[in-house]
Image (cartoon, rainbow, N blue to C red; front, side, top):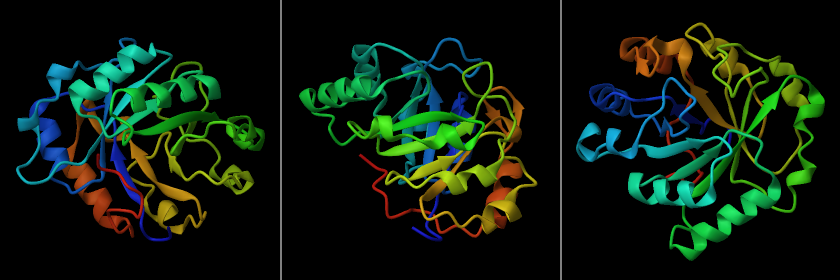
Amino acid sequence: MKNKRLIKICGLRDTENIRAVSALGIDLTGFIFWPGSPRHVRTSDILPEAEPSGFRPGRVGVFVDQEVSLIVQTARQARLSHLQLHGHESPSEIARLRAALQRTGLEQVGIIKAISVEKAADLDLRRYDVCRPDLWLFDTKCAGRGGSGKKFDWSVLESYHGPVPFLLSGGIGPGDAQALNSLQHPMLAGIDLNSRFETAPGIKDVDLLRGFIHQLHFNSSSDLTIHP
């Protein structure tokens, strides 16, 4: 997985901004379907014409402790490639979601489970062995549901020895390229960018993103299957 890392940009809302961000050649775009977020979207907000002709990054839908039936319906309507569960979803709930995706012909849709991280013990995820997601997303532990704009101590990543690859999230900003390039964890699948690259909630600074991505020593398009 070394040097083949994904770039996910989350919290997109505006059609023109989605088009411009997608044109950067990133791997995944993220859309928050949780009404409690200032970046909340509806399926009608992410139209096909919002993306460049001939290329579409994988679409990640973000949900927080929402009903399986709603998640599956949104996955179909919005043509999502991944579902990101950002609440307190248990292994049994992940199993129910997988079963529902299979019943409805959406078995190719991947599942990302967000984990709030503060200390090494937070990365003991053996309770999920009965039903693992396809990816973890390690975010900074905070009072809300992510979006704190703050980092956790990345040195605790050394405590993670599980078989599921992860995306690194939480307060990654324009000055972090060198530190990210030096991270060598074998299960680091990529990064998730959001609030530190915004001009307003849900509106990304495309020039800032372009310059940052140029500094990364990532080869876009990982070995992971990211498209439906």
